Length: 590
Image (cartoon, rainbow, N blue to C red; front, side, top):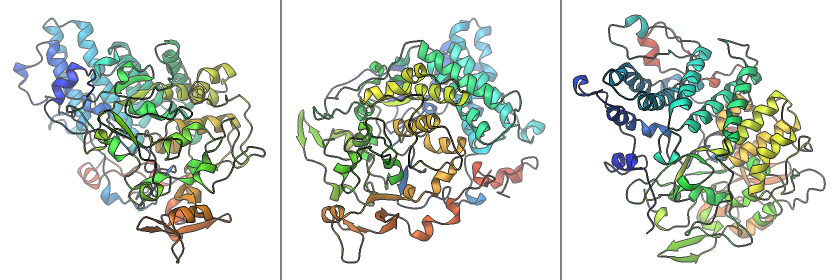
């Protein structure tokens, strides 16, 4: 078995337990102050306890959005959520960070090296910013605290929420400090300068576009314009550093491709050592028998599959939308027809005859071939399009809690997409910008380049408003390149694009053609049969598609979002509102 390098700091922590997120240890904020805060080693130990906040390997990053269909309705997407099951109003991580901030200067007073101290301060401020960013995305205004409160601090404990953009400013300050003082070397597994810059660019793009498409006026010194300018500038700094590149992933020893159908995109996500990958700004390191996850086992299953709407969004390899005249699209009577001539990322993320189903056992590669009838069930890719993006052919990595390929926490592809979108929104997206960003992603899979004047899609997605063909194509590229990495729902919210959820194809699967019926089985009472499981069909625009939900559910009012919909923000848990008379509930959740 091949062993790879993993940071010593991570090994020291993860040796204590084995799970899919073994570094999630609580900081040592209950220690006796007299025995702590003596050296930079104490600061490092405390910061180590927060490493788990960076993130971990997950198979369901975009599960609840328009690009996936689930086996059951989601309360949030379908409007069933109530204030009684509100969660997420949690300041625990913020308190842990503030405890450090209240005490770290004692190390300086005892002669601790200022640069080393600032490194750990930068890490803690990174985590605080990360948590507050999640809080304001979910709840809007929140109370901002930069120190630990005592029970006697009643005025602060019971204060009203601070304005969102005030908190946003604090998040930006924390990330700018982290970008100055965190380490540069990603091999440590700790927050780095460039990971702080990436998060900063992400935050600024989110609120720059959110304020634009929700028609929000400037507040607390932040506007759509200056936030987009900052997103552009910070992402450009990372690009100009020349430290990162989009790579054509090599075949891992245990996940090989056919010579004529390389898996340069999908194999990127099953690499044993992202420490050597030029696309990794910050990886999460895993190691067999020490630090593991189980995404390799879960990929393609878990009761959800890609939606027909998402599958149709993939362009032809020459950059033509599939429904445009002369595109060469062969239709969707079979999977083979559907992928022919398309963006190669399509056939790399779903089971096709171009993506071999190897089973790697004891250095031998055994090819079994994809068995669609067995693979596509209500428990595995129930739309007929299982998402195999994180699938490893290694039999050992398909066992419970035994996947050990590394995980991207921050990936250079996101930086390029941020830069392209920010430029497009600001009206500064030139061909040179596209060639340095979007077209780097397309070169990986031998796709035609995007130009500043792309052809308009003959059958575009309905955002509820018009966007330029260039912005439309940049959004399309983002959806495809970052599929299932946890960005999609945030993108819909910041673009004010919940109209997309009304598209029936966001809730449907494969075209149930005569060929599909012959392949899967055609029960006498309609639908198609996957093994022992039967799924129903729905007719849309003259064609039958696999469906999961009843038509009544698909077209329920809950799937429709209004401009003043309460779901733009989550409800604050009732117990918190009752405890603090100054804590007002979010609109519509009273």
